[in-house]
Length: 347
Image 1 (cartoon, helix red, strand yellow):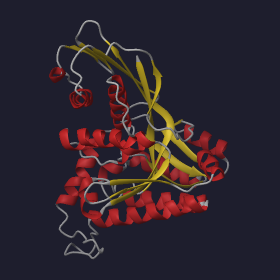
Image 2 (tube, rainbow, N blue to C red):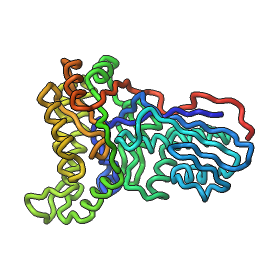
Image 3 (cartoon, rainbow, N blue to C red):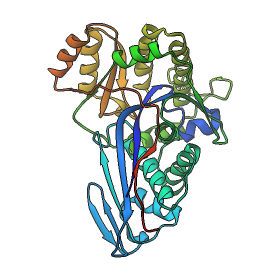
Image 4 (cartoon, helix red, strand yellow):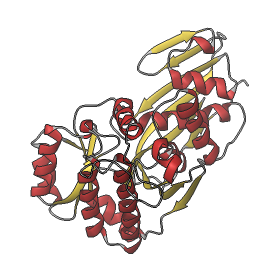
């Protein structure tokens, strides 16, 4: 039996600039963090010679091609494992909530499968293989942020060049700032999930029909004067991410929280499905009771909300919980995807 533990992702700035419709033209830049909420993958031998998969459903099949779960199917095909294997998965938090759980699942699965074969792979390969499966094979409307965040862990600056190359640089952040950030970032579960792919597909369609997009120097095209065009929004989001990075390195967390608010107001303009009346109501309540900024985690529409609150934490928590939100305390993860248990397998 082999068990991997892979962290979920919390975007701290520049999120969305990894999406291909933007990154392939202008390059992506984002601040990512991983938290101590995990996906666990267990892989072991199966004497019957077939394949057994346990996730939200159970599959017992004779061939990889017959697997219904797309991530499991493609991971097994990529690693060349075709029989006599059993795979189980568990998660600390629900899927479809904006924390990159499906990508953490895939990264952890690849880590386990390669190790099962006797191969120890780099974090870069984990992330690139996961990106290849999701973006090239399954054609999902995603970028590379989540795969890299889960594979590497820590708090990093990711830069994606137009040719797709990813550079991972640890943020120069003090332990005192990390401790304050963990205390002041307050994570709440809204109680409902959303279809990430639908939201990201909407953004891609907006980009494809954007006749007034900007060139690499940021000059406006021939679009309507009142319509900035979706690329303009992402240029601004990238700049906000760079400013957020400076705040983390300088320990200016108050300004970091304020940038979160600016980012959220801008992000809502990108797609109608990004927010809804209930999310807007919760956000307004949070801002009226001490939050300096916040946002929906991930593509939007539901899942988790995070707020930066630098005082009266218990009072803030009580107010939000009365609205039906569930407070989820967390710490940052600095391990990334790792093997946490192993014993001899037959291979």
